[in-house]
Image (cartoon, rainbow, N blue to C red; front, side, top):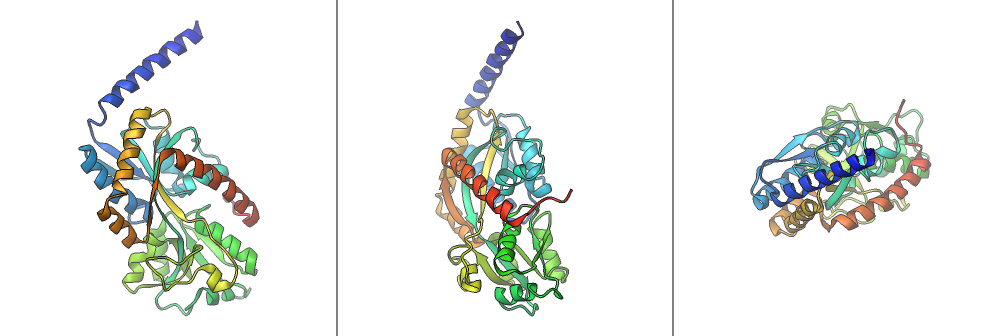
Length: 322
């Protein structure tokens, strides 16, 4: 009897979701950004969200829910109604790193459906313009000296930047101390204020300060130079060993059990948006490489990244303080 009731409820729920999908969208859509304003995730969400609003004919609101390296915002969306009106814009950590480092109240595979990956950007290491460190090699050499304390801000525990510095330390026996922050905006403030020796985050989060002459880029953690800062060397060029790093990607998700028809409509919309020359220009000027990654491919790439990052976490002993 109990099973029959559960089956009946499931049928009713599916029918209700199917009806909603046919009428979608008919009200405002909220995109939850799981990092603070003015960072790479937030900027990407606002650029793409504005275009989504034009295409769907409904207001798209960006709501910032930062904290815990993106897992707070991810949790909000994972537990939202699966009706297509609450989306997540996020970078890698909340999906491919943090759920495997600490206890979170969502399953990134079951509770969040990948819709589209829209852009990717490598980490960039910056110092304030008055810094005595002119090259990344100088910074790393200083970090090999026990008498020096080289503190570099990174956007959260388990972020690409923190893992990358762990790999650098392993390779050259340096003592770079990664200091996790809630987001790149706070890193910028402390680098400019002199609290931090340097900072590292995805290129878009640091680009404006470099262009303004307030910060100086030292290196990009990528197999190739950045198209936006081609004068900066890669880690391999700076230090002599290969480190492709874990580029920050930006992508959109919806809650698990969202009707396939809604996922497909959003997927199609995001792909069309990222083909728009005006959007491509905006993203490139931020230091992002535009992607056209569909839902199926996005999910497959996440599985591969999870495996690679698990290995890197073991090698670097990156962990969350208890």
